[in-house]
Image 1: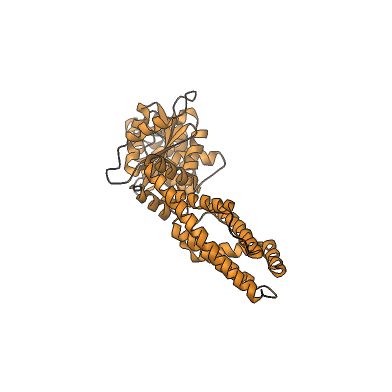
Image 2: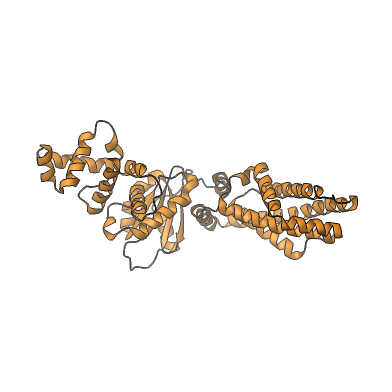
Length: 387
């Protein structure tokens, strides 16, 4: 027992052992390779706890306690909720047990034969017990989630916008088990009451808002949840076009983003929420919602740029940067410099009506009216960057 305790103390004191366990799991179990930093932190914590418990069982010839089993069942339930496959979870434990055995075998001096046999017996018995307990808890949690689809879909979107997922593939599989399909391409819409002094969005209001965008009909599924006083909707990209009308009918305003990839919805959510937090009152308009360009400009003005200035320029000016539309860029630049259509027309040698036609054309192409104070500011920032 003294030799086992000596080895246990050495392994527990060496932080590299946990790092070795986690690295091996990530290399050998694909579901763990794509985990983000927040999930890896959890994996390291579980690995450190499991290492301590397994070594203790080896030293004492003990067995898993009821508290241990509750912990493993809780881990399995969490994995069912975040969509990580049970087969991958159990394989991770087998990989970790193999690495731990190798670490013990590499001790100097190595464990005696009876200690090595005790280690093998402990590992096999423990893996068998935890596999049964975890599989049972995982199945029960999965069935509970599937039984309450509305709640399960809210949890799915909560995890998606918080970045709590092993991979998009895992979330896609999780949606499929609920008979749903994630929208891709998508529009992430964050909505709040237009009256800043009004009550926040309730779950019932959010559900009614979702119904306005239609059911899934066998296609991509709109999802909705509530974060604080706001509704968050994940919609098929095409549904985003009706967002201004739907929000306006309900006295809401919002920010709709579609420029981030599906695996970066958490980034899109933070960008949209920050935009609603910081946008001045005149940035909101009854006939439009804030978009990627607005959110990126607000992040830039707040000293939190989420992309390059060049990308911001492309988001806002878009078609105006294409060859053959130099005359529209000139009209926009001159109008912004002079402050009026008449002055811009005189400088360009145009009839004022021709200049106003070009401004309307700019509005059609960019969905931004140069005469609107906020939209003019975003256009001014974008053209300054472009130059």
